[in-house]
Length: 98
Figure 1 (tube, rainbow, N blue to C red):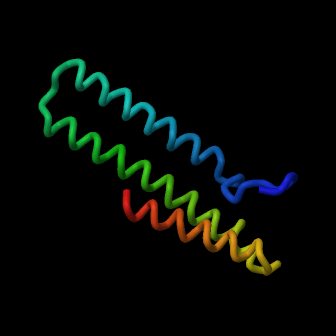
Figure 2: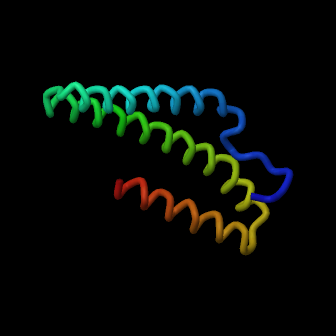
């Protein structure tokens, strides 16, 4: 990112942080469940919930990246536009595989 440019999620930074803190709490809860030797399926259900929450944050960040960083680069054109599109495509591929 160029100096002086803000990330696309800047306007939603507090929302992103709030969601990540909630996920952090979920993961700590998972650790307690294992320490307490809770039933495997109960733990797996909570792992699934934490995974969905992380995916939700990832999609929000991706959406903001496309709407701001990629869109701005495409308007300018050139190598930067190509690089941003390639970068976004790779990020989408990683999310689909996860």
